Image (cartoon, rainbow, N blue to C red; front, side, top):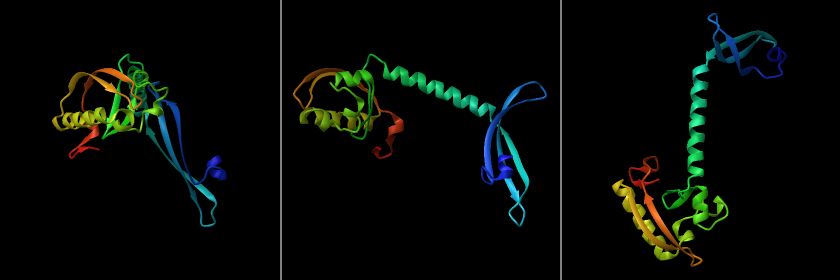
Length: 171
């Protein structure tokens, strides 16, 4: 009725459940288009339905999996940071504490020179390049100093993420 009356335009998409002859519930994505005569009056509706049950099920499973991994990362007792190029793109809650920050925005988008003294930043940048070039993780323990002079002891495992690496090194 809404399609014929022009309330929702000439095309629409909606989703609803149906029960099959085998008494199974299927989720159908309906595509509808209104056909108009030469005077612009609605004469017919063309509709087609796609069974999107499995697609929605997989999307839901993926969402749940992402939420579990996100929760695992966010609340890990180990500080985790993801760096793309020289810029921090992700930190978890523990890394925020280690860095002496109160929120992610104080770290994300910054580079090593904005987070550490020059010597420490230079060492981290050289280390990161080496790790990326060799595609091998590196474990080390070291003291570092933040720009405010506050020292911190890091027990660190750096590992390259291949989705952040392009042919020419870093994206």
